[in-house]
Length: 115
Ligand code: AMP
Image (cartoon, rainbow, N blue to C red; front, top):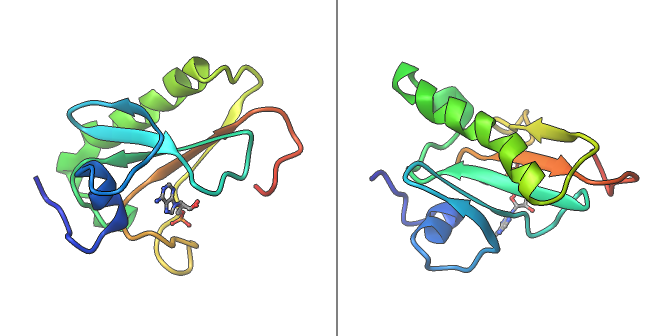
């Protein structure tokens, strides 16, 4: 599987740095964000290294569908009942800080720290 040895999220996938995982399967990993904006804030990432959403190709369509379909499942598991927000930042103007595709999923009662 595609991995970038300098990528922090690839290191989480490889178990080289710790993360508070909430889900893993053949395609993706989900874990709590280290600096949460909301009472529940998880990141869903592909196991393979894809730098950003603008790098996806049609072959990634099932992966992206899987990531999105996982959001309500995880929020339910984590006790979120009042709705949630999904967000993918892409590139510098999109505010992306970590260069490995990830989807933020945030929920829980407001007010939130941001977002
Ligand atoms: P973005 O601005 O969309 O690239 O968001 C990157 C997110 O990754 C931020 O919300 C960070 O708090 C989060 N993050 C960075 N390093 C880690 C880590 N080691 N474990 C969990 N979350 C992280």
